[in-house]
Amino acid sequence: LLRLAAADEGAGLADLLRAASQVEGCDVTLDALPAAVAAGMVEIDGAQLRFRHPLMRSAIYTRATVADRLATHRAIAVAMADTPERRLLHLAAATLGPDEELAAKLERFADTALARGKVASAVPALRQAAELVQDPRRRTEILVRAVESASEINDRVHTQLLLDRADMSELGPLERARLMVVSDKAAFEPDEPHRRIEDMVTTAAGAFDAGGVQVAENLLWRAAARCFFQDGDARVRTL
Image (tube, rainbow, N blue to C red):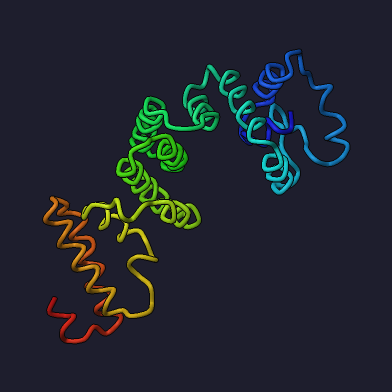
């Protein structure tokens, strides 16, 4: 039961009990919780089961075997049949290897979330979608979308993690420009500012040629700002 709770912090207690019953093959009730509550590991807050410390949740999940994690996510997916969006995320977490159909569903979920302004929900969906596609170029395109979404909500940790997973060799001129807009690492490193400005202008030109007028203008504006604040020399100012 604790492993299930660790796999989905927001799951209701009723869903967790249903999922635990499926994993164990018998009815699991609240009688399974007193020892964990008495030990200070978790607390029951209304209809929610909450860990007293986030490191406890992380430790329980990471110590589980891969097989146990997959079974956990499959069980939660079944228990959440009435909440298709969250069910989809757990189905993805329970899947190993490519699954183009599931990846497409996750992308559609992300599109819907973004249209509703739920950017934070789109990021994990896009990240999981990228893990399920086989084509490196398509995977990178999905990761670019995930990076942009994470950056939009100022989630610097996930922005950098997603950037590190993107295969730069698979980037086209437009994707490269989009990443440069959101990536401090790619565009705004403090060393060699003149070279950074040149890279931004060159990348903007490539994006413009590829039809990305808006992202090209964004990059050029940023290059101009860097030129002003970092004292671009005469050669750089004429780019």
